[in-house]
Image (cartoon, rainbow, N blue to C red):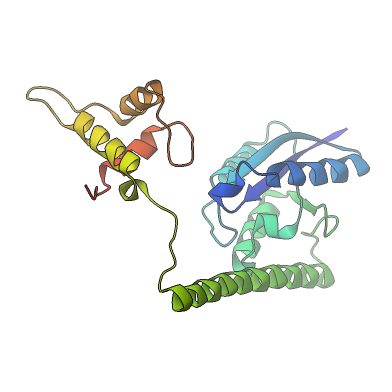
Length: 225
């Protein structure tokens, strides 16, 4: 049985814990099973916009396929817009697949969308353009809704940050206190501070464990109190 990779992506941090990943996996598994293929690994992009070229999971997958001691030469996605919504970004990524001789399959749009005939390329670009239009319209409608609410109520609150709540400000103060250098001593590292916060039972605003990267961002946050 031929082995393949699955690529899955959600665009918002809030979607990471939702059913998006599971839905995409089910569609990919069904597509693979129907074609007699076996998905041996998933490369998962968490909270990455479909209009951005910067894709950590995609980069890992491409490096893996460049080295390719495993023989995997096919990637399956749920839909073409899971690869990218922006048409230009989509084409850049697909050109990397072509360069590596990798087949690209969409569970929704059909078999190898990298085939070189003009009709296939046109279909791929039309699908990409539709996804790009849908994304642009969604952004425009959300902006219009915010403007309408602001006009009606005089405000349109976004998500609160650490500096906007007492608990968050307390965490910022604690992080900065721990980072202060004592005479003759080095500042405590970000990872160590994260481990201490986690040990105290504190969590991020998303309810997740602290990481060194989260702590590093907090150091540069200006507290309001």
